[in-house]
Image (tube, rainbow, N blue to C red; front, side, top):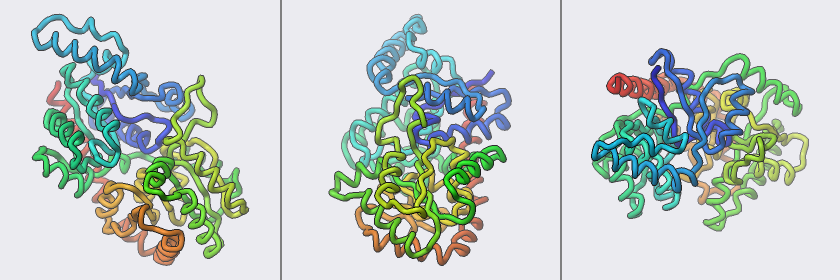
Length: 417
């Protein structure tokens, strides 16, 4: 049996990460018959519970960041030293995640954005450790399509220069990331985001319909997907992100008369599983509840559920327009040809929208007021049919590009065999 391990993404919590895992599960078996996927995750109990509800069959491996830094990395260094002098080394693998990696044919890093100045040194170190551990164990790594850079800060630049050339393949997700990699002289491939390949089936649409019906939505609506991560980043810039979302939503609701569904694309499981919880920065339902409570009006509705990634895509597919601060809420909107306005913090949004000729729909959170945002959203609603046609005209090309990830993984597995 051929086995891959995914690193850098949990299935629950951030459903964007889950959508990339699901895309691999949907597409890889056709390219590599008999393949098994082992998901290395920070939230193993929540992941297992969600996967069981959805009827998905992955192996889940507990691989939290603290264990990565304090257990896996030191043991991997020792194993690597023993390997280098051809002494027995597998006895060192005392952690299940290390044994899983060592037994794999390939490790696929599906981090959404890595080695970027925007996330700070702590995340740079984390991404360095994610990739160095399998390398120390002699297992090849493919870094699937993701945003990379910029590499202006010394820590970011040094870590990226050390790690990226040592990976088997590095896949850039857009023009800005490609430019950043070229600035380091890193050889790379290019492909659209893996999540474009995730399938939405009838059961996912039925569950989305059920959840929307339960909160009183039976026709057209707008969707708003705020981000707890952006809220924290905006606060560092002295910006009250929650107030911007609240006031923008109020203006749009007043102007359109359409119901507005506020939902989290990253969330804590509805009930904590065996006490396992996600950090607040990954639980968008907290800010969703705050927005809906502050507005306190019958046409602003809360989808207070932790849905699976394909179920969330089915919700987005029903919307007239999506206002998103979560990257993969934007991806699901584009994948379903749903017009989308993005209020974000990184080049990663614009470089994807640029593939559709819609980079102007990516707005920087530091430069937008509620009046400005509401005007942009209302103008996009007026152009809804035009925007839908624009997305549809490019979607097949972008999806074909995303499939390049699968081709690269299959090629590397063939080389490993």
